[in-house]
Each structure stands twice: as C-alpha cells, then as structure tokens.
Amino acid sequence: MQEILFQYNPWWEQNFSVAKLKPRAKYLNQLKQQLTQRQIQFIIGLRRVGKTTLLKLLIKELIDSGIPPARIFYVSLDDYLLKDSGIIDIVNEYRKLHKLRFEDKIYLFLDEVAYKDAFQTQLKNLYDHHNCKIFASSSSTSLLRDRKATLTGRTVTLELKPLDLDEYLQFKGIEIKKRDSHLYESYFRDYIREGGMPENALNPNRDYLMALVDDIIQKDITAFHGIRKPQLARDFFVLLMEQSGKQLSLNKIGRILNISPDTAGRYMGYFAETFLIYLVPRWGKTNVKIISPRKIYASDLGFKYLIVGERDLGSYFENYVYLKLRNEKQIYYLQEDDSEIDFYTEDQILIEAKYYTEMNPKQARLFTEFPARQKLLIDSIEKINLLESRPH
Image (cartoon, rainbow, N blue to C red; front, side, top):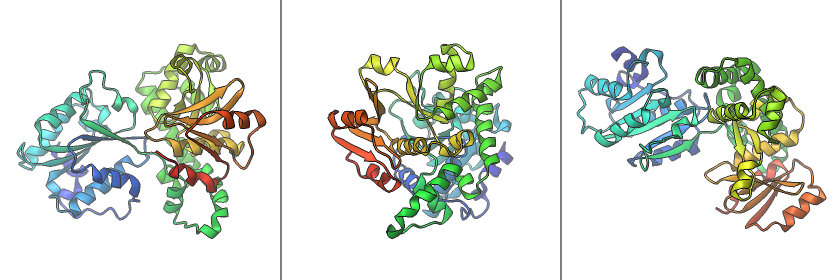
C-alpha cells in the first residue's frame, strides 16, 4: 500500500506544482474558510466537474502556508487496488508511514469517499478520535444520505457545479468590456454547444462529452444499481434531455419507454443522484408538491446540446437561469390553471426567464398578480447579473 500512497502524494518527496490547474476562485475561497473549522467538509458534484482539481489546489495552499507536506494526505478511494482496505486502515497506514501520533494534526483529502462501505461510520471515527481536518468528495448524492444520522452536526457541504458563463469565458481567456456587452449573446451560443465541464471548455470535443455521459451512466447508474438493460438507461437519458425545462410525469415516461411508473421513478432518482439532472417541484401545499410532475433541468448545457442540438434556445436560457439560481434556497415552479412562471424561490422571489421574448397575456397576469417579495423578468444574457444582486 505504501507505494500507492506515495503515488497519490508527490509533495511528500518533491516540490508540488499546480501551474497547469485552472483555479475556480469562488469555490477555493469557500474551502479555505473551512480550514480552521472542525467539521468534515463534503464536496459533491458531477464526475470530472473539477472536485479533484479543487482538492489539489487547496493542498497547494496548505503547503504554501507552511503546513509540513507529510501532514497532508490525499487518496482516491475508488482505486481498485484499495478495494479491500477500509478508510481507517488506509489512514492508519499513512500515520505509520510518517510516524505520526494521533495528536499530530493532519489534513485528509478523501476523494470519492462514498465508494467505501459504511463510510459515515469510518468518518465519524476519524472525526471523534483523530486530530484531523477532513475534506471528502463524492460524485453521488448518496454521500448526503445518512439514515442513522451518524454524522449529524459534523459536516458542511459544497456543491461544485459546471462552469457558469463568466467562468467559461475566464477559462477561455476572454474578457468582455462593459461597452461590448452585446457580445455575450454570441458567446452564450458557444457555451450552449460546449457546456461548462472544465476539460471540455478548454478543449471542446463532442466525443469527450459523449464518453463522459456514457461513463457516468455505466459506472454510477448501470453497474452501481445492477441494471440488466443498459440501453434503457441510455434511452432514459435521451428522453430527459429532450424534455429538460418541461414538466415530465412518471406516467408519461412509463408510456414512452414502456416501463412502469415505479421503474421510471427509480431511474429518475438514479439520474438525479449522479447530478446529470436536477428536479424542480411545483409550488403549493405539500400534497401538490408531491403529486405534481417535476420539471427537469440538465446539469450542464453541453449534455442537453448532445441530444437536442441548437433548437429552442429559450429552453437553454431557462435552464441556465435555473443553474444560476441553484443554491441553498429551495426552488419551485409556479402553476395556476394553465399558466406557468418558471421559478419561485423559498425566499419569495418570482422569476420568469424569456430569451429576448415577452410573456403571453396569461403569464403576464399571473406574474403581476401573484404576491412575491421581488419579481424578476430575465429576458437577456445581460440581465443575468440581476440574479446575483437579488436580496437574500
């Protein structure tokens, strides 16, 4: 095992450079603020969205701040060669390797931690009995499911999302001056095609995105859940991308794919778990939220483009507005009779996304008459910044 651990931690033997890694300042700054906090920091998000890169950048920050490299330990727990070793075993081997006592402060970076059985119990053991700061990542929301409440009060969570348009432009080295704000629209069309996955933004390649989607479906859905018909999962993904931005009931999915509503519900959960899609409930009383169809949004516009192509730009714009809204607040869609407003937030902000178009009369009436703390009509790329400045 020692050879594997040295491979994962080159800073133990040599200078560690992150010159080739693209920083994402807003996320890195949030993690840096957690360094002095005791809680376990979870980082969740899509495969290849940049979680490992973020961890490596934070490791470099620690080394530059004077933390001895031997006190910093990184490991990817989905490594096949470590499949028979528990988290505690691996950490104990690391302590023995560097002759570190339990009272010696260490920084643990545990990538893809949910691959280990009973990881919650093992993390609790580390938290309670070791002098350590833990950063743990996962490409599945299963990280957040803790049925026995093992880690209650011991964790904070950060979701790492694909690049937004501003980050995408930064990765490309593109700066748009205020006087040239009209250029945002043409760059937004590039962003729709390429999406916000960091590697693809730097080197756009349709085959890369297709392979990534196939990898997620195969590893995190088909293999993980023991699905015997992998083609059904692929067909399900195509349907979700075609219907993104729309309400989609489980009964309708069942009719289209010739499966039961229960099966459709399970598959929907699998795709949401892996961050390929987000589900938005309808605003209303509890029974309305439960019974009504959810609206579906792609987690990355590049995934949607693989299936839909450049048609219905309005649906891409609405999807992007949702991604910008997605934070700690719960988001709903608003529907009364046969009129719908795209988003209503938990803090009473009503938002309609219209890509250089206007609301129809019924929508306009609902938008005007519905009581809300603030109302936003986002009808152009330039107005996206209104979402950042809304009251919280």
